Length: 128
Image 1 (cartoon, rainbow, N blue to C red):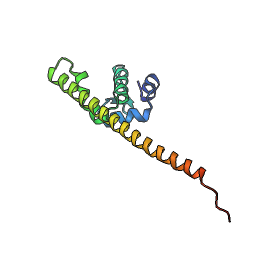
Image 2: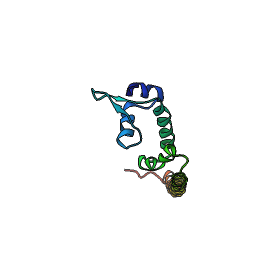
Image 3: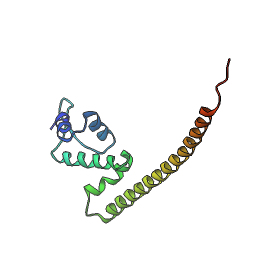
Image 4: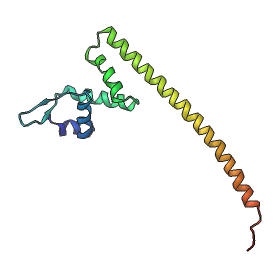
């Protein structure tokens, strides 16, 4: 199938599909005219790639996890994918913790601003 059909069947834009290919996440064959052609198996691969992106992984990390799909019976590859996914989850947990701290710091500043605003509302307006 050509790139437009793969795009239609997966809901992923042709631009993203070309990006996946540039990053080594997806493969295609080329016609004599240079058009990309994909196998039916690429539908599942694109779906998996989307799930991995949705899970917060970068294309670099996805490229390191995908060999697990290609050689699922290799314990070394499976373990490597597991370690990578665990590391990514830990990174996301740290990002969440940092965002919670940042939100709390912002809440403190908002409280200070509200008190200042209330004081200004009580102050007499100077006359000209």
